[in-house]
Length: 315
Ligand code: MEV
Image (cartoon, rainbow, N blue to C red):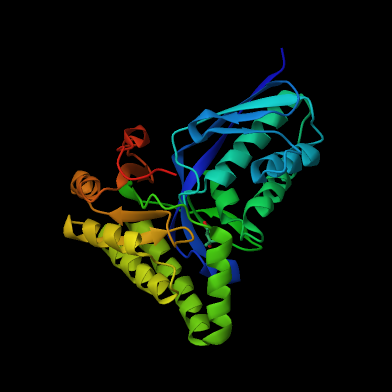
Protein backbone atom coordinates (compact mmCIF):
# COMPACT_ATOMS: atom_id res chain seq x y z
CA UNK A 1 0.00 0.00 0.00
CA UNK A 2 1.41 3.37 -1.04
CA UNK A 3 1.52 5.74 1.91
CA UNK A 4 3.58 8.81 2.82
CA UNK A 5 3.57 11.35 5.64
CA UNK A 6 4.73 14.95 5.68
CA UNK A 7 4.70 17.86 8.12
CA UNK A 8 4.98 21.63 7.60
CA UNK A 9 5.49 24.10 10.46
CA UNK A 10 3.24 27.11 10.99
CA UNK A 11 5.27 30.26 11.57
CA UNK A 12 5.37 33.56 13.36
CA UNK A 13 7.54 36.44 12.19
CA UNK A 14 9.25 38.00 15.22
CA UNK A 15 10.73 40.97 13.36
CA UNK A 16 10.97 42.05 9.74
CA UNK A 17 7.75 41.32 7.80
CA UNK A 18 7.38 43.58 4.76
CA UNK A 19 11.06 44.62 4.98
CA UNK A 20 11.91 41.05 3.96
CA UNK A 21 10.08 41.60 0.65
CA UNK A 22 12.70 44.29 -0.17
CA UNK A 23 15.75 42.21 0.68
CA UNK A 24 16.09 43.02 4.39
CA UNK A 25 16.53 40.21 6.89
CA UNK A 26 13.71 38.94 9.07
CA UNK A 27 13.59 36.79 12.20
CA UNK A 28 10.93 34.10 12.28
CA UNK A 29 10.08 30.94 14.15
CA UNK A 30 8.65 27.72 12.76
CA UNK A 31 6.19 26.49 15.41
CA UNK A 32 5.71 22.92 16.54
CA UNK A 33 2.10 23.42 15.46
CA UNK A 34 1.47 23.09 11.74
CA UNK A 35 -0.03 20.85 9.09
CA UNK A 36 0.31 17.06 8.92
CA UNK A 37 -0.37 15.38 5.58
CA UNK A 38 -0.92 11.78 4.66
CA UNK A 39 -0.71 10.69 1.02
CA UNK A 40 -2.34 7.48 -0.19
CA UNK A 41 -2.97 6.02 -3.66
CA UNK A 42 -5.64 8.07 -5.45
CA UNK A 43 -6.25 10.70 -8.10
CA UNK A 44 -5.14 14.03 -6.65
CA UNK A 45 -7.97 14.76 -4.20
CA UNK A 46 -7.02 16.97 -1.23
CA UNK A 47 -9.11 17.13 1.92
CA UNK A 48 -8.55 19.42 4.92
CA UNK A 49 -11.56 18.89 7.21
CA UNK A 50 -10.38 21.52 9.72
CA UNK A 51 -10.60 24.19 7.00
CA UNK A 52 -13.66 22.63 5.27
CA UNK A 53 -11.50 22.18 2.18
CA UNK A 54 -11.99 19.62 -0.56
CA UNK A 55 -9.97 20.38 -3.68
CA UNK A 56 -8.63 18.79 -6.83
CA UNK A 57 -6.03 19.91 -9.32
CA UNK A 58 -7.85 21.64 -12.13
CA UNK A 59 -10.93 22.64 -10.09
CA UNK A 60 -9.96 26.28 -10.56
CA UNK A 61 -9.68 27.06 -6.82
CA UNK A 62 -6.41 28.55 -5.49
CA UNK A 63 -5.83 25.39 -3.40
CA UNK A 64 -6.52 23.21 -6.45
CA UNK A 65 -4.07 25.25 -8.52
CA UNK A 66 -1.42 25.13 -5.79
CA UNK A 67 -1.88 21.37 -5.49
CA UNK A 68 -1.55 21.01 -9.28
CA UNK A 69 1.68 23.05 -9.18
CA UNK A 70 3.19 20.78 -6.51
CA UNK A 71 2.17 17.55 -8.24
CA UNK A 72 3.44 18.78 -11.59
CA UNK A 73 6.81 19.83 -10.18
CA UNK A 74 7.21 16.43 -8.44
CA UNK A 75 5.79 14.50 -11.42
CA UNK A 76 3.22 12.73 -9.23
CA UNK A 77 -0.45 12.28 -10.21
CA UNK A 78 -1.71 9.17 -8.44
CA UNK A 79 -2.09 10.28 -4.81
CA UNK A 80 -4.84 11.59 -2.53
CA UNK A 81 -4.02 13.79 0.46
CA UNK A 82 -5.64 14.02 3.86
CA UNK A 83 -4.48 16.93 6.02
CA UNK A 84 -4.84 17.45 9.77
CA UNK A 85 -4.15 20.81 11.38
CA UNK A 86 -4.76 22.73 14.58
CA UNK A 87 -3.92 26.13 13.10
CA UNK A 88 -6.40 28.48 11.45
CA UNK A 89 -5.98 29.31 7.77
CA UNK A 90 -5.42 32.83 6.43
CA UNK A 91 -4.52 34.06 9.92
CA UNK A 92 -0.99 35.26 9.24
CA UNK A 93 0.55 32.05 10.58
CA UNK A 94 1.85 30.72 7.28
CA UNK A 95 -0.87 28.11 6.88
CA UNK A 96 -0.54 27.97 3.08
CA UNK A 97 3.22 27.34 3.24
CA UNK A 98 2.76 24.77 6.03
CA UNK A 99 0.16 23.02 3.87
CA UNK A 100 2.37 23.08 0.77
CA UNK A 101 5.38 21.70 2.67
CA UNK A 102 3.27 18.94 4.23
CA UNK A 103 1.85 17.95 0.81
CA UNK A 104 5.23 18.05 -0.94
CA UNK A 105 6.89 15.97 1.78
CA UNK A 106 4.04 13.43 1.85
CA UNK A 107 4.01 13.21 -1.96
CA UNK A 108 7.77 12.77 -2.02
CA UNK A 109 7.63 10.02 0.61
CA UNK A 110 4.72 8.18 -1.05
CA UNK A 111 6.05 8.36 -4.60
CA UNK A 112 8.89 6.02 -3.74
CA UNK A 113 11.23 8.18 -5.80
CA UNK A 114 14.02 10.10 -4.09
CA UNK A 115 13.08 13.74 -4.65
CA UNK A 116 15.97 16.00 -3.74
CA UNK A 117 15.24 18.70 -1.15
CA UNK A 118 15.62 21.34 -3.90
CA UNK A 119 12.73 19.77 -5.85
CA UNK A 120 10.49 19.84 -2.75
CA UNK A 121 11.41 23.49 -2.16
CA UNK A 122 10.73 24.39 -5.79
CA UNK A 123 7.31 22.69 -5.55
CA UNK A 124 6.45 24.69 -2.41
CA UNK A 125 7.63 27.94 -4.03
CA UNK A 126 5.36 27.24 -7.01
CA UNK A 127 2.40 26.70 -4.66
CA UNK A 128 3.16 29.84 -2.64
CA UNK A 129 3.20 31.90 -5.85
CA UNK A 130 -0.35 30.74 -6.56
CA UNK A 131 -1.45 32.05 -3.14
CA UNK A 132 0.67 35.16 -2.70
CA UNK A 133 1.98 36.41 -6.05
CA UNK A 134 5.64 37.12 -5.35
CA UNK A 135 6.27 36.07 -1.75
CA UNK A 136 9.70 36.60 -0.19
CA UNK A 137 9.85 32.88 0.65
CA UNK A 138 10.07 33.37 4.43
CA UNK A 139 6.89 31.39 5.13
CA UNK A 140 8.13 28.42 3.11
CA UNK A 141 11.57 28.56 4.76
CA UNK A 142 10.05 28.55 8.25
CA UNK A 143 7.59 25.79 7.29
CA UNK A 144 10.52 23.58 6.25
CA UNK A 145 12.89 24.57 9.02
CA UNK A 146 11.04 24.95 12.29
CA UNK A 147 12.81 26.63 15.25
CA UNK A 148 14.07 30.22 15.08
CA UNK A 149 15.81 31.40 11.94
CA UNK A 150 16.98 34.46 10.09
CA UNK A 151 15.76 34.73 6.53
CA UNK A 152 16.92 36.95 3.75
CA UNK A 153 15.87 36.84 0.11
CA UNK A 154 18.58 35.13 -1.89
CA UNK A 155 20.32 33.83 1.24
CA UNK A 156 17.55 31.62 2.60
CA UNK A 157 17.09 30.43 6.17
CA UNK A 158 19.85 30.33 8.78
CA UNK A 159 19.08 28.79 12.21
CA UNK A 160 19.51 31.36 15.01
CA UNK A 161 20.81 30.32 18.44
CA UNK A 162 18.37 31.02 21.27
CA UNK A 163 19.86 30.94 24.77
CA UNK A 164 16.60 30.80 26.65
CA UNK A 165 13.34 29.29 25.44
CA UNK A 166 10.36 31.58 25.74
CA UNK A 167 6.62 31.42 25.51
CA UNK A 168 4.84 33.61 23.00
CA UNK A 169 1.16 34.50 23.05
CA UNK A 170 -0.56 34.47 19.66
CA UNK A 171 -3.82 36.40 19.28
CA UNK A 172 -6.14 36.03 16.30
CA UNK A 173 -8.05 39.01 14.93
CA UNK A 174 -10.55 36.66 13.28
CA UNK A 175 -10.26 38.78 10.15
CA UNK A 176 -8.62 36.91 7.26
CA UNK A 177 -5.65 38.80 5.93
CA UNK A 178 -4.72 39.15 2.30
CA UNK A 179 -0.94 39.06 2.03
CA UNK A 180 -0.86 40.11 -1.63
CA UNK A 181 -3.02 43.19 -0.98
CA UNK A 182 -0.98 44.26 2.07
CA UNK A 183 2.33 43.84 0.25
CA UNK A 184 0.98 45.83 -2.73
CA UNK A 185 -0.26 48.64 -0.43
CA UNK A 186 3.17 48.92 1.21
CA UNK A 187 4.74 48.95 -2.27
CA UNK A 188 2.55 51.92 -3.30
CA UNK A 189 3.38 53.78 -0.07
CA UNK A 190 7.08 53.12 -0.67
CA UNK A 191 6.84 54.76 -4.12
CA UNK A 192 5.06 57.83 -2.74
CA UNK A 193 7.02 58.30 0.49
CA UNK A 194 10.83 58.00 0.45
CA UNK A 195 10.86 57.68 4.27
CA UNK A 196 9.53 54.15 3.80
CA UNK A 197 12.93 53.11 2.44
CA UNK A 198 14.55 54.27 5.70
CA UNK A 199 11.92 52.43 7.71
CA UNK A 200 12.82 49.27 5.82
CA UNK A 201 16.49 49.80 6.78
CA UNK A 202 15.38 50.06 10.41
CA UNK A 203 13.71 46.64 10.16
CA UNK A 204 17.14 45.28 9.28
CA UNK A 205 18.69 46.96 12.36
CA UNK A 206 15.90 45.63 14.60
CA UNK A 207 16.53 42.17 13.24
CA UNK A 208 20.24 42.33 14.06
CA UNK A 209 19.42 43.55 17.58
CA UNK A 210 16.79 40.82 17.93
CA UNK A 211 19.28 38.15 17.00
CA UNK A 212 21.70 39.45 19.66
CA UNK A 213 18.91 39.55 22.26
CA UNK A 214 17.96 35.93 21.51
CA UNK A 215 21.58 34.81 21.72
CA UNK A 216 22.08 36.24 25.23
CA UNK A 217 18.57 35.57 26.55
CA UNK A 218 17.65 39.27 26.82
CA UNK A 219 13.87 38.80 26.86
CA UNK A 220 13.19 42.40 28.02
CA UNK A 221 15.31 43.77 25.21
CA UNK A 222 13.47 41.60 22.70
CA UNK A 223 10.16 42.91 24.03
CA UNK A 224 11.25 46.51 23.33
CA UNK A 225 12.23 45.53 19.80
CA UNK A 226 8.82 43.94 19.17
CA UNK A 227 7.13 47.19 20.25
CA UNK A 228 9.36 49.27 17.97
CA UNK A 229 8.75 46.89 15.05
CA UNK A 230 5.01 47.26 15.62
CA UNK A 231 5.38 51.05 15.57
CA UNK A 232 7.06 50.85 12.19
CA UNK A 233 4.37 48.50 10.85
CA UNK A 234 1.73 51.02 11.99
CA UNK A 235 3.67 53.63 10.02
CA UNK A 236 3.31 51.37 6.99
CA UNK A 237 -0.45 51.33 7.64
CA UNK A 238 -0.73 47.57 7.89
CA UNK A 239 -2.30 47.59 11.35
CA UNK A 240 -6.07 47.48 11.92
CA UNK A 241 -8.52 48.26 14.75
CA UNK A 242 -8.59 44.59 15.80
CA UNK A 243 -4.80 44.37 15.79
CA UNK A 244 -4.56 47.49 17.95
CA UNK A 245 -7.11 46.09 20.42
CA UNK A 246 -5.05 42.89 20.71
CA UNK A 247 -1.72 44.75 21.04
CA UNK A 248 -3.00 47.18 23.68
CA UNK A 249 -4.92 44.45 25.53
CA UNK A 250 -1.73 42.39 25.71
CA UNK A 251 0.29 45.30 27.07
CA UNK A 252 -2.40 46.07 29.67
CA UNK A 253 -2.30 42.41 30.75
CA UNK A 254 1.45 42.49 31.34
CA UNK A 255 3.12 41.99 27.94
CA UNK A 256 6.58 43.54 27.64
CA UNK A 257 6.28 43.63 23.86
CA UNK A 258 3.53 43.09 21.32
CA UNK A 259 3.16 43.44 17.58
CA UNK A 260 1.27 42.24 14.56
CA UNK A 261 2.87 39.27 12.85
CA UNK A 262 2.71 38.44 9.14
CA UNK A 263 1.22 40.72 6.53
CA UNK A 264 -1.18 42.63 8.81
CA UNK A 265 -4.53 44.17 7.95
CA UNK A 266 -5.99 41.32 10.01
CA UNK A 267 -4.34 38.00 10.81
CA UNK A 268 -2.44 37.58 14.05
CA UNK A 269 -0.62 39.40 16.86
CA UNK A 270 2.24 38.10 19.00
CA UNK A 271 3.01 39.15 22.58
CA UNK A 272 5.92 38.46 24.89
CA UNK A 273 4.64 38.40 28.47
CA UNK A 274 6.92 36.41 30.79
CA UNK A 275 4.82 35.12 33.68
CA UNK A 276 1.67 36.74 32.29
CA UNK A 277 0.94 34.58 29.28
CA UNK A 278 -2.35 33.27 30.66
CA UNK A 279 -3.39 36.82 31.64
CA UNK A 280 -2.83 37.98 28.06
CA UNK A 281 -4.83 35.13 26.51
CA UNK A 282 -7.57 35.64 29.10
CA UNK A 283 -7.71 39.38 28.34
CA UNK A 284 -8.00 38.62 24.62
CA UNK A 285 -10.77 36.13 25.31
CA UNK A 286 -12.69 38.73 27.31
CA UNK A 287 -12.25 41.17 24.41
CA UNK A 288 -13.74 38.55 22.05
CA UNK A 289 -10.58 37.19 20.44
CA UNK A 290 -9.14 33.68 20.27
CA UNK A 291 -5.55 33.18 21.36
CA UNK A 292 -3.05 30.51 22.28
CA UNK A 293 0.41 30.15 23.77
CA UNK A 294 3.29 28.67 21.86
CA UNK A 295 6.99 28.28 22.63
CA UNK A 296 10.15 29.15 20.71
CA UNK A 297 13.72 28.22 21.43
CA UNK A 298 15.14 25.40 23.50
CA UNK A 299 14.00 23.69 26.68
CA UNK A 300 10.38 24.78 26.83
CA UNK A 301 7.55 22.42 26.03
CA UNK A 302 4.96 23.61 23.54
CA UNK A 303 2.38 25.23 25.78
CA UNK A 304 -0.56 23.87 23.92
CA UNK A 305 -1.54 25.11 20.51
CA UNK A 306 -4.41 22.66 20.93
CA UNK A 307 -5.82 25.06 23.55
CA UNK A 308 -7.19 27.41 20.93
CA UNK A 309 -9.77 29.36 22.88
CA UNK A 310 -12.93 29.31 20.87
CA UNK A 311 -13.82 32.96 20.84
CA UNK A 312 -13.82 35.42 17.97
CA UNK A 313 -14.25 34.28 14.39
CA UNK A 314 -11.63 31.82 13.39
CA UNK A 315 -11.14 32.00 9.67
C1 MEV B 1 4.08 37.33 5.22
O1 MEV B 1 4.15 36.25 6.14
C2 MEV B 1 5.28 38.20 5.32
C3 MEV B 1 5.38 39.36 4.34
O2 MEV B 1 6.66 39.95 4.57
C4 MEV B 1 5.23 38.93 2.90
C5 MEV B 1 6.41 38.09 2.40
O3 MEV B 1 7.47 38.07 3.02
O4 MEV B 1 6.25 37.50 1.31
C6 MEV B 1 4.34 40.43 4.61
